[in-house]
Length: 122
Image (cartoon, rainbow, N blue to C red; front, side, top):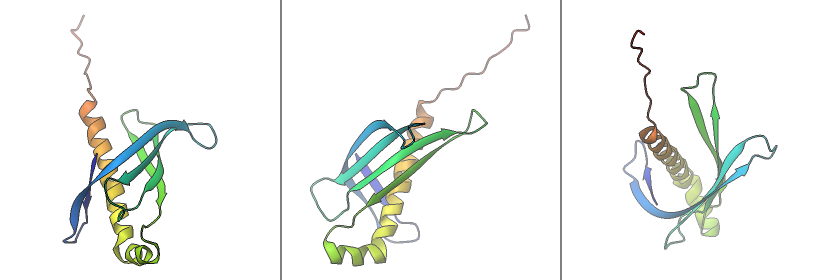
């Protein structure tokens, strides 16, 4: 899968190939289904590996729901990677996560089909 990294208000924007692993699981309290996700870059070690959890939940309105992504990553390249992360790497990670969630949202919305019941008066 290709993840886009659009950096808002910056000249920096790029795409990178990542391998995504996803598996359905239960939350720590065993109350809700969640999806454990992890991704790592293909062919390079300059980007971090991410591990996290996708959580979907509904609201009172059956037409509304939310998806949250919680996770963590470790900057690559040791101390130099930490300096990079402090300067811009963290913003890249946030932008990547936001774009990943937007991709999921677009996919869900494109697969949804809503039908309207029409009464024929009889």
